[in-house]
Amino acid sequence: MTYRIERGVPAHAERLRAIEHASSVHFREFGMTDVADHEPTPASIFEDRARDGLLYVALLADTVAGFLIWSPMDGQAYIEEVSVDPAHAGHKLAARMIDRLDEDIRGRHPAITLTTFRHVPWNGPYYATLGFEVSTAQGYLGIVTPVVEQLTGRKPTSVREYLTTHKAALTG
Image 1: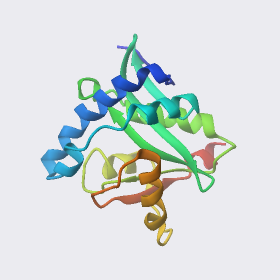
Image 2 (image 1 turned 90 degrees about the horizontal axis):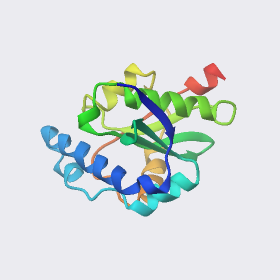
Image 3 (image 1 turned 180 degrees about the horizontal axis):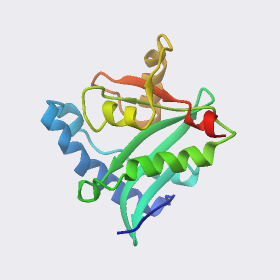
């Protein structure tokens, strides 16, 4: 199977909502029913990110298998969400989309940042394998949480950890 990473388009929005819903059910395994039961991101947010060039999709032929949405925040590239359809898991699609983001932001943003759940294997531990580290920025979650709420239209309800990588700065 050959996947390709491309910029998303507004027409992908409903498929992205379905992927988000399908991938969120795995949070139940960790007692995170608030995440598993949460409504998917509104289509309008995906459409806006696509129009602004802030959406990447992993495609297998014409089927969207995963997505990454991001936004500039404090001069850095903040990953709002990465999600892969469970039917397409195991192909390193999240890593490939993050690599694409890294290539595209080189010279414009010194780092890629995100918030994640430290105890969920496909979150904190996974991102650590990609070079992300826990940030030492004091109080950053106090800044990130309201921004995430503004960007996504929902308030984070589970404890998240702020991670950063300077991959873009090192390869630029």
